[in-house]
Length: 194
Image (cartoon, rainbow, N blue to C red; front, side, top):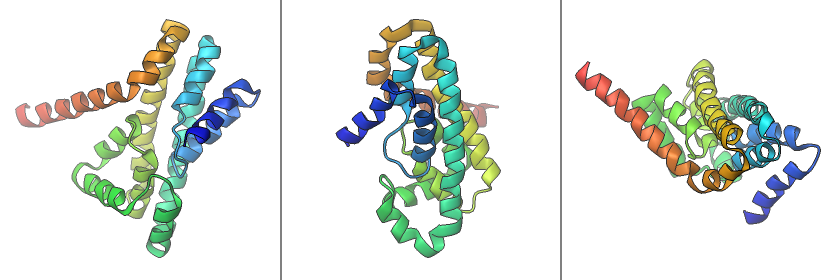
């Protein structure tokens, strides 16, 4: 995994960094194990004024990849679910079952949280297709969650510059989880008190 991670980061040093970001984000939302955030951070740190552009590229690639993940689940799960589980890193039968449970209980909110947090997004995109969740539900949650995630990273780099890189590398997952706890807590408060 470490060599794969370094391979992803090497794209920031090439003229193909932006297309690589789109491709990586597309692949990560449907089958690839490495998230696109490190490449977005590396590209943005090298050109902080373009950090929103890199966030946009990352978001577009991820939403397009989510559609592919949904198609994999929708069209191939019934006939090839076991093969899909064996071939896609991060997708296990247990994770699929867990995602299915979240879909049944929380629906749109489950996808939204998966789109924003470090949870392997491909598990939810493929599960959404396998469970025949309407594509528009997946796409809407993906647009909101993924763009919020990538633009949060872009905003931090735009405002604070390269000095924020170490903090993002170290604490982004924790901040994302805390944000989702607050988001879910807000929905619970609204449901019980209003």
